[in-house]
Every structure is written in C-alpha cells, then in structure tokens.
Image (cartoon, rainbow, N blue to C red; front, side, top):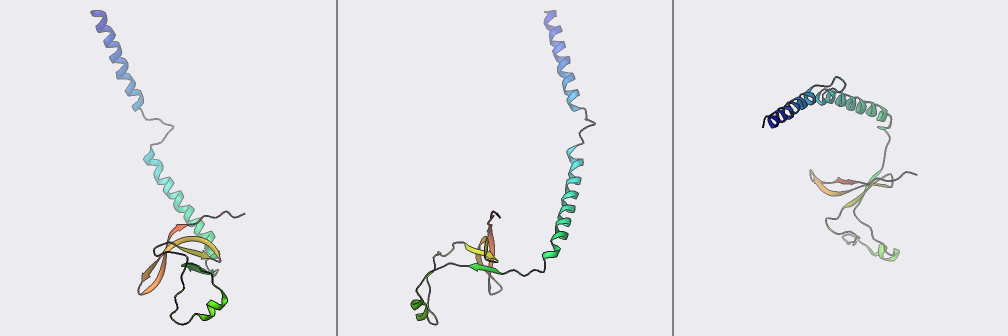
Length: 131
C-alpha cells in the first residue's frame, strides 16, 4: 500500500508542475491585447493612404442609371403611346433594380422615397471580372 501512495505522490507532483510551465509568459510572443492597437493604427494609416490616392479621381464625372425594368415594342406601338400610357416592364413589384455606372452594371438595389423624391438604395454590389 505504501508503494501506491508513492506513485500517487509522483503523479500529483508531475500534474502540479505541468500547469506552471504553461502559465509562464513567453518572451517571444507578445499578448494579443498589445498587438491589437498596432493593427488598428495600420488600418487607419492604410485607409488614409488610399483616400489620398483616390483624391485625383474625385472630380471625374460619371453617369449613374437606375433601371427599373425593360420591355421591347415595335416602333408603331411606341408612336401610339400618349400621355398617361402604361408600359409593362419585365420586372415585378419589389424586385431589385439594376444600377449602372457608365453603362456597366455595378449593383442592384431598391427604390426608396427620400423627402418626397425617389431614390435608390444599394442592396447588392456586383463584382465583375475586368479582362
């Protein structure tokens, strides 16, 4: 029975030593909290740099179009249209509209009312491959 107690003591001593090694701070790896401010500063610096680089294009005019829908008709039908005529489009109520910039589809969105005027809110950005 004395042998069992000695084995138990040895295991207990090993278990007590193991957590001590894990808890010692490493000189090589700084705590995660100390690294976080550096990341935020570099992101801020990066955004300021990108904003400065884009400043050259701020004054370039672009044409933005919001397309509610499309339809095709013959010229004779088009000439018969008068004031108050209704043209049926290929979209349903509540369906997303297409937003073009310089005749390139860049986003989809929804029609909204802003101060008694119509507006468009973007709900999806369209990524296109530029080849």
